[in-house]
Structures are given as C-alpha cells and as structure tokens.
Length: 388
Ligand SMILES: [Zn+2]
Image (cartoon, protein in one colour):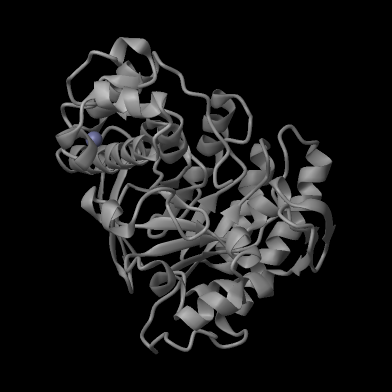
C-alpha cells in the first residue's frame, strides 16, 4: 500500500511510503538484487546493517533452482533465506527473454529451455503468479514479453497486446486463482501485484500500455524495457512520455536502473523504487561508489593509501579497513575483498536513497541532484542489464 507524503516543489520527485506485511519501505528507495535468494556475498544482517529496507529476487532463477517444492517446504522465501523484510520478485519474463534458450512465445505462455541444463519449462501468467505465491513475495510482478532494443513498431505492438493480455490474466490469477499455496501465510498477509508498462521506445505504445494497465488496475506500476541498450536520452524521453499518466496514489518502479546519475534523474521525474545489479556487480569487480566518485580499487595508486574507502561512510568496510588493504585483497583474489566492496556499495546506495528522501523532505532535492550529477557525470559507468 503506497502513501504519497510529499511532492517536491521544483521537480516531480515524490516522498512516500510502501507498507507491506514484512515492514515499511521509505521511498524513493533502491532494492539490491538477490538473484538466487542471496545478495551475492552479503547476509541479511549485512543488508540491515547498512539500512537496506527491501530486496529483489528473481523468479526465473528460483524456479530453475531450487524449485518451488524446496522453498515451500522451507516455509517460503523469507524463511528460506532468513530475510524478514519486504521482498519484491520479478516474474522471470526478463530472464526468459534474455537468458533462456530455444524460446517459443505462444499466446498462452512461453516455452523455454533452462540456460543451466537445457531442461524444458512452460510458464504462463497464471503459473508465475502461483509460483510467486509459493515464494510469499510481498510484491509480485506480472509476466511480460521483453523485447530487444531496437525493435520494429509493428512487432512491439504485437508484443504489447500479448503483454496486456498476460497482465489481465495475471491479475485474475492473483485474485481468483488457486488460493495461496503458502501454508504459512496468515489470512492477514498482504500481497501486492504490479503491472509492467512496455512499448519499447515508442511513446504512442507506452501511453496505450499505461491506459490499459490502469483499466485493469494494479497496486503499483513498473516501467520495464528501459536500460536495455538504448541511448540515455531516449530512456529519459520514454520515461517522460509515460510517467505523468500514472496514478499519483500508486508506487512507480523503474526496473533495472541504475547508476547514481540515472537514479537522481528518474527520481526527479517521479519514480519511487529501483533495482539494479550495478552496486553489487561493480563491487565484485573492484569498483566502489564513493562520495567523491568511482574508486577502482585495483589501481596501483591505492597501494600506499591508508585512508578509508569513503570517509563519509560508516559501513563495516569503511570503518575498519584501508584502501591499501582492499587493493591488496583484490590483487591476491581474496574473497573478502569482493564482500567488503559489495557491502560498501550497497551501503552507498542505501545512503544515497536516504539523502534523496531527506532532500525532498526539506526542499533541497534539486541541489542534491546537481551535486550527484556533478560528481558522477564526469565518470560515466556503462549501464548494465539488471537481474542476470
Ligand atoms: Zn562504506
């Protein structure tokens, strides 16, 4: 359940709150990606220590391994992975279209082969909702057809019709379908279902998608199919064409985004939640986000640098270790290095979101946005596909 608390005077930025059965999420907020029921190298306690309020997990990966039965026997995904905060799961659509092999798209669902062992699966909008009920996700996503960029208008139109039909069927399955198979869910457990706006880079199709999804009615609306290789300006143009058509009283989620500069740009257009592998993947690759910009810790200039990775950060990494030691850990391939940089980056993102919330609250968001752009636009980081 989303509550809009305040709108920024100078931009479209929104301060709000999502209330779930597993706790509240202050928005704007960022979800670290826990692909296979784990935010790589980090424990749930680590995530809490840096202020993470909600995580994302991927239905596609969990469906393949360990499968529904094992998670159901564990009592759901929260218990299985020992994270008691809110969880949003994607529908698997993005991975089916980007990772799986020998895909056959049919009107009733998608047939594909696992990218791990080639075994065959057939998923439908209904089966994916049932699976997310087994997981016990606080926020579930509808199955959608993800198209590549660039893509012809005619094909995007056909794919969009299917996506809208699937959204309608997902909603029906969410409400009327097989009762939750989660034996542990109490009657009061509240779940939410989000629709996904597709339509490629075509504003007419995006607008049509928003209108049809609002007619079906969802608890929140995600904007999908962006950050898939299109130029940055096109991503913002597409966002601009659709975002103001979304209802004020529902959560707005920009899927698979992004870098600090993408986040402040999207917040200023009215986005509430984000997910991306950028902080964790870059952490494992030795790139840290700091108040002064990117730090590539493998660089020889850090060999004799005995300062903290980010002097403004009070995470376990920055409080206890030096850049010199982190540089050493990466040079000798010690796993602790991957873990400490992942932890710091997730901490940086959690703090970034808190500072965004605070600046909307006190009316200084436009200045805060500029300060982030001043630092990070000088150091462009390749945008990355989410959730793989
Ligand atoms: Zn830190």
